Length: 80
Image (cartoon, rainbow, N blue to C red; front, side, top):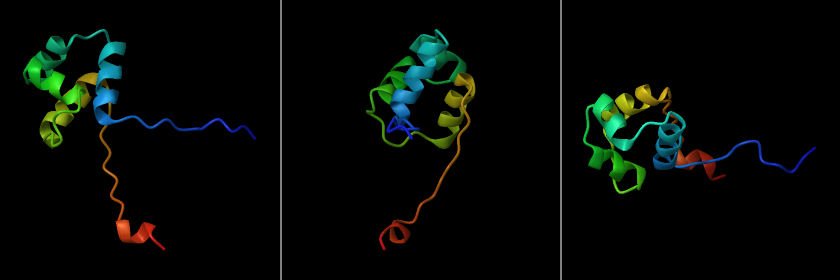
């Protein structure tokens, strides 16, 4: 068995930037098709916005070919 991790964790801002780059989209292009400003995309990618609305996130992810999945984990259940 290999010690190589099977998952890689990235933050949402990193994920958006990575997929935008893979699709060769500029921040301006992504902003236009998602219906937000280029500055807003820039702020998201830099991690300067903590609470992106679900609607905006859904539009951005749709344009990047990503699906949103919400996973709820109860902190009390982890501590045993």
